[in-house]
Length: 422
Length: 58
Image (cartoon, each protein chain N blue to C red):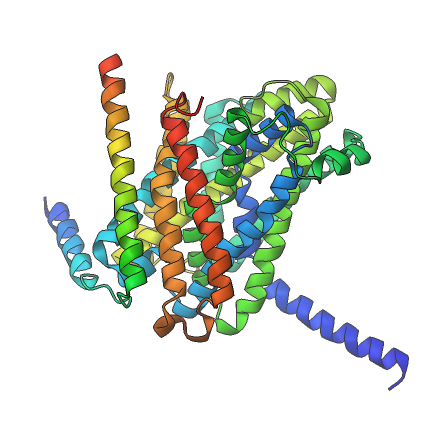
């Protein structure tokens, strides 16, 4: 075979793999990019504003953390063809099942409220009233799920994921010093020592990287998409690419606020966007658009995670491939969750700070349980067969899970008792 | 009333369907579930304590 034949053969092989990936791609990318939700954007903006580029190395460490946890849901979903809620009910019984389902419902609803808070604040910067934002979001999301096809829903969701990349041009527009990013950001360091404040921010970054709804969402999404055992390899690639993109976006946000807002106290991403507008209106606008998109993506995934879980347990039809007539309860539960959460930010004097606090605390009760169940399910050789965790996978995933549980517990407890660690 | 009864019978049906865990209850699984129970119990105690102290302040 001559050189060009070899080249052509290799190109065809790679192109075939790329085409296969494009078919399988979706659940991993969507869940990972949606992980950068409104709360996540605030955390990254605050990280950059407080510590500049110094914690970029820590964000990069979160790539394997996110990947190893989420890839387990791909295997579990593809092999068992069941969502995470159903898997917990069936494997661990009704007690743990109800505990997980009710906890998921509470955490998802509270998180959804915070997404609406982020979205209304983001569009508020452009003069859009909060009620109009809520109406637009509810209509948009309803149209998205009511089209009756998982494929269409996923491709539109991927379109919103693309908008999330808006932080990349924003980071280039601030003209950051590459040598400073490399010198300060890529060498592990704790600026000013491991203080309580820094520790709290590190825990917040971990907390925003792995959220309970992500496990439930990706597994159900894999099932609804109809991925099979043979698709696991590409599903893992999808998750890995997603984990790189999500952390890359976080790094670009840190670069933006670390360059322009260092030393400025940031309570939320909307405040950061307003402050950035004073420096450069385009960068501020990009920040606000990104915040709205992040909240929207988070809302899309979170509301679906709950509806899928309820459908699995109550035996309702629960697929985006079904019409409203075929799966009325699936769509009704989706709509109720969405509307009730959307109304909360519109209530004058609503306890939004308390709700944010509750999200952190309640998530701490669900996340450890969901992660422990995940590892136990992946070790059930009777069900998982050759796709069960290997000893190496167990070692890595158990280390990550123990670290996440410890840090998220400290985060939750410090949210309950702010003076405890001072 | 009929809707509530239907809902309750659905809950009973779910409880019956998932009454017996299918995962093999090895020592590691039992230990993990026990630690999880203790962990959650302690968290609930902390939350109740916080709730009571907040109520007292109010």
